[in-house]
Amino acid sequence: MLQIHGGFLARRRWRRWFATVALLLISNAWLPGANAQYASRQLKPSDVFDTTNKVIFRDDFRADFRKWTLSIDALYDPAVRPLTSDRVTREPLAGLPGRLPATFTLPGTPGAFRSELALPAEEGLQERWYGARIAVDQIADQAGYIVLQWHAVMGKDKVNRNFPNLAIHQKGDKWVVARAWGSPANIQRSTTELPGNVVPGTLTNWVIHAKWATDASGIVEIWKDGTLVYQQKGQNAYHLSIARTPYLKTGIYRPARKDSTTSEPPIVVRVSDMRIGRSDAGYGEVSPVVSGTLDKWHGNRRTGSLLFPIDFGRDVEKSTVGFVVPQQAGVTGGPASLVWSAGAADRAMFSVALTNRLDGSTRTVNIRGYRHNGCTYAAMHVAMDCQHRKNSRLELFFDREDNRGLPEGLYEGNLMVEAIGWKDTAYRRSIHANIRIFVPGVWRELRPGTPVAVRGMDRHIKLGTIGFLVPAQSGAVGPRTPILETAPQDTKFKLTVADTATGARYPVVVRARRLTGECGKVRMNSTFACGGYGRQSDLELEYRPADNPDLPAGRYTGSVFVLAQGSYESWFQRPIAIGLNVRK
Image 1 (cartoon, helix red, strand yellow):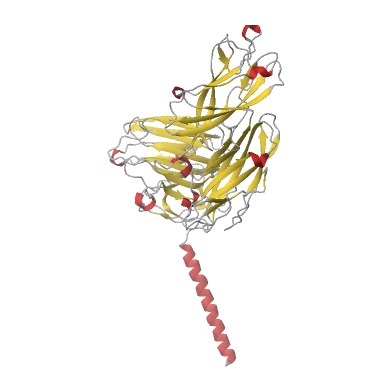
Image 2 (image 1 turned 90 degrees about the horizontal axis):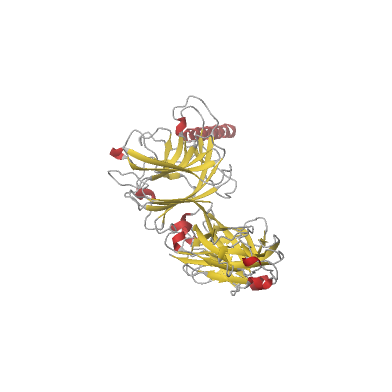
């Protein structure tokens, strides 16, 4: 009996096992592929956009695609729109630790031309800020494909052929911006190739500011990796019966393959850190990589600091955000992980190797990192809240007392910091700090409307004159070599300034000239001697608003390192720090 009973139990266990396996096989047949994710069939703006917040939409693709609809080839009807596709998945990518970007694949089979995710269109023509991080696996042919596009809802105004109001293409090894606007019956178009080359496998950070309009009030501004590469004012939307904000799509759209009958290698595009902000959100709130400059140029001040304008605590639903320094070349001693609390003496000081632009040498400079928690500040990696507040702002701090004996010059370098959630451990956001530390003997502050002069440099030499150069440095481009020229003409050089409220960076024009005395004003780098023997070499700089009409309203700061260089007595070099403050 015992044997019979034992055999019966064994058979029953086997039957249960087979039933479980069969059930799993049946259920898996209804589930998406291992990395495919469910999307929605149809969405309204209120389903995904929360316009009560500055950032109305964010998706780092840590979950599924239910905030989006799939757009696969010509399946336009929501009734037949797929909910999953092995063309749109979540896959790991080097450079995004702990995250899985949306990965789009166009298989290269005949007739395959679209693998995208789409958001709904908002009512009315809105002003919006957009952020995205994109990497491609390949160099495209010249037909290329679109990776980001904003498309109109044409409705009853639909014509046989229309184009996205705004699109970013990859064509060959270049990024290209295309725009379309006007009436549907007479569509106007333009294309612009952006500077720089596409590097496969490298994440490119995009920020797009669009004030959608059918009149002259429209604005399109595009930043690539923190640099403003496109700026256009004027109409940027179609005249339609019903005004709607062009809806965003991302992934791969390759119209040249619509009617293809041949095969080609697959195309892969990866997208992460998607954000959309209201008009008051600004650059920093949507930028995939938050950036800023620790700029210490004022000679009378012992310290310099960079307080990022973003409260990272707003990015998480629970607890706070702290900051760590990931492993990187030239940086030692930074906190590698978060702690809940620390002693008052813990200042999170670390060292960054910076290059002196005066002589090319490398020196180690000590920097401190702090987290502002809404009540006070603590070391950057301390996640403790204050009265249950989520406030989490990062400040980087330079103190001359921490860096005694630093020789004259401009010390430049870069630092990467990672924002990490304390409880929301999947949350990560990259932060890039450009460090510019001036240790000058001479400094000046420049403001609009008032020229500023640096006088008396010629007292340091006995023969020849002095010219003024703009050495290689981040954020400024000017003359690097002396010239002999007598024409009364200003030098115009470019300097990058940052909006103090949002972190958006804009190039501006600054005028500079050398004052020679009786022979008047010449270019800043001209070393000619007035009358053949005059040594007078004063530098004058000026910021004119008329030279910068496209600079938006706001408050901006920036700086430039100028080098006073002897012509005959070439041993003489003197660094000059110029800080620029502009309010428009």
